[in-house]
Amino acid sequence: MLERSSKLIQRVSSGIEGLDEMLRGGFPEGHVVVVIGDSGTGKTTMVLQYIMEGLLKNEPGLYITIEEDKESIIATAKAYGWDMEKYIKENKLALLKLDISDMKATARQIKSELPGIIKTFGTKRLVIDSITLFSMIFDDATERRIRLVGLIKAIKKAGITALFTAEVNADNTLHSKDGIVEYSSDGVILLQQNEFDTSIKLMTRVVKMRRIRHDRLYRPYEITDKGLVVFSNEMVFHEVGMYDVPASARKPRQPV
Ligand SMILES: Nc1ncnc2c1ncn2[C@@H]1O[C@H](COP(=O)(O)OP(=O)(O)OP(=O)(O)O)[C@@H](O)[C@H]1O
Ligand SMILES: [Mg+2]
Image (cartoon, rainbow, N blue to C red; front, top):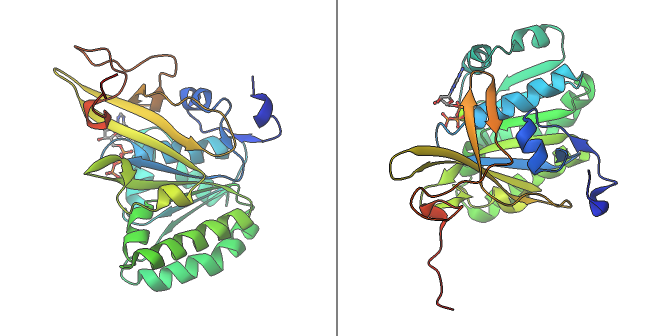
């Protein structure tokens, strides 16, 4: 059941049942949410799942890829059994690869062309995979923030719900590499791959999701041949301790 304070906010399902449960119903409509994770934690898989969920519900999608080629994204989707080409042919999905050689011009282009594309396709769901390169192209932190905020504003004006992927900061695994996108976004989801004593565990956490109540605990997930599966009712335990957070994210305890 939805929380009282969140009642009026429409939700957009993520395509991942356990994640929707952590969010008490899905992403708030119109939010820009960033999925932060290390290499291979399943960021692309998660945003593909989000786009495919929309297509199944007849909600057109726009997938902007910045690093990977279109063919590679289509092949990744295909390996999970998701046929992007069918939806591209039906004009329900647009897959764009941005030119990184002139990212500044590309940034201007996205901002000016996004509203038109969204209107033409009736786009409801947008993905930018990954936002890190877009952001890091601007050397100056202030310009980086201005560009990101400008992009987010354009997306919000169009009234669509967007997911960005972002690389993690290797020195602080709770933050993105650019250190900005998490502040400018409405929501932050972490995907982590943690080494415990004898095993490696994947765990996810909703760090923020503006305007709703949500689960804040780390929950285990797996990448299966059908995509991400989040175990929203399970805790992540340290094998020899009783913590529900990985060592890398644990702060030293203060004496009481
Ligand atoms: N079809 C599949 N079935 C099961 N697991 C898969 C499948 N495809 C990928 N994986 C798992 O997912 C991992 C990568 O997922 P994905 O590409 O979504 O991660 P990513 O975080 O986007 O990585 P990158 O940092 O390269 O962008 C692979 O390393 C593999 O462990
Ligand atoms: Mg990826």
